[in-house]
Amino acid sequence: MFTGLVEDIGVVKGIIHGVSGEDLKLEIYSDTIDLRRGDSIAVNGCCLTVIGIRDRRFSVEVSKESRGMTTLGMLRGGDKVNLERAIRVGDHLGGHLVSGHIDGKGTIKKIVPALRSVSMEITTGNEVSRYLVKKGSVAIDGVSLTVNEFRGDSFTVNIIPYTLENTIFKYRKAGNVVNIESDLLGKYVEKFLAFTKDNRKKEKIGLDFLAEHGFR
Image (cartoon, rainbow, N blue to C red; front, side, top):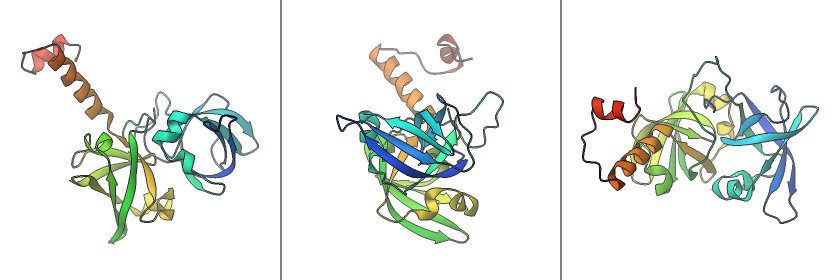
């Protein structure tokens, strides 16, 4: 699990495609993050496993599934990426709980200055928009943000100066594609409601109902 608070901006130093052309290995340089083999790390919001370390570089493998669901397959040498290590027991949770499992991709429609911050509008598909609510949480390229407005297939987020300066958002432009992970809570609620419907549950959802099903 992650928090959506980026620790460093890494640089893609190498890309090796697998024999089948489906999987690929990324080599990323980070000046500040200490890692060990087997550690989990979010790269632009995607949870990956460190498989090798050399000097200040580490390598991760990206599966065919991840390439299709995320922007990792679009990376090129020299591209910059957001990096965050998995949280440990006792760490502060400053953003929101982020799993590192991307729901889909979105396209930046426009970026508009708003005082010292910027407002970013992003369009996305139903696989993501179904879970978005106004003032709810969303992770974009691994950054924990709040949905300011939500209209049809697009939503807006506000990015404060600190976040803009310390993430790859400062390099983003209209037309760029980003990774999106919606709030976990919405997915669990949908799953729970679907389960009760499929099993023809007629009970009203109240305190007694939730307690009966394990919610304490």
